Length: 169
Image (cartoon, rainbow, N blue to C red):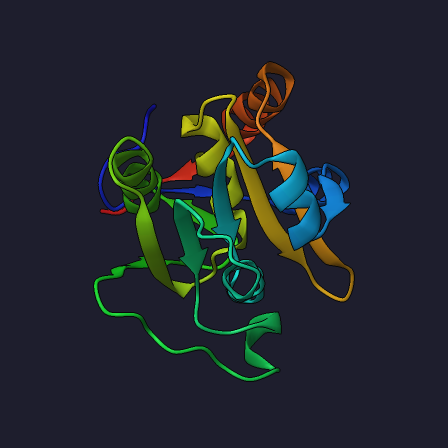
């Protein structure tokens, strides 16, 4: 990976559109409990993490920004022991990429992002193995799930290769 501390991947309009068209299957907590009980569950988004917890599902890793719909519908409380990091909207920072790698290859946990967490699905898939299911929210639609596979990882690799890298001076 070509990123260095302080740099970030920038997701342009074309790639954002491709990402939006690549959504996973709509799922429910019941689906996750039934179909993915032996999988590592990752939650991206505050509402998704909350719904999973309310249904007795403890994600291995959760990535939140303490708000929903860009802050228009309530807010969520910080949790003691969470990893806090900055990630600008429309980007994936080097630091977020490598924090996700560290937690996925370690004991998991919770990341609270100052900025935007939506795109965290990309590094999560990049660093996850095939026994992983990523649950995330789609505003005004519901929760979607992506089971990590060779094909999904290839799609993510292709996306990353097409992203612009912005280096900080």
